[in-house]
Image 1 (cartoon, rainbow, N blue to C red):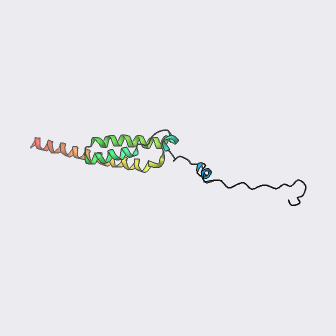
Image 2 (tube, rainbow, N blue to C red):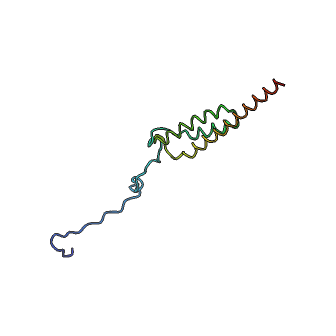
Length: 123
């Protein structure tokens, strides 16, 4: 026997709980892809490459320092312009200054080497 209801009222039947297959097929929270800075900013980041070249400039050859300086400067300009993600700003600055110091030392080395040759020739 159904209970007496006021006019216009109705009984709402509860829904059956979802089955395990239904729970597994539809996630409660939509799955989002990981944040991809390349798609958000349009250009890939090259600060790590600049840092690698700056380190190779110390270890292998000074020519890598010139490449590191150029890549790091371009990266800093692109970050300031908003074309690249700012998450590697510190890496780009580190690569830039490592390359500057390394090239400064190479410049001093060349000057002293030239002075040494000049002194050897004049004596």
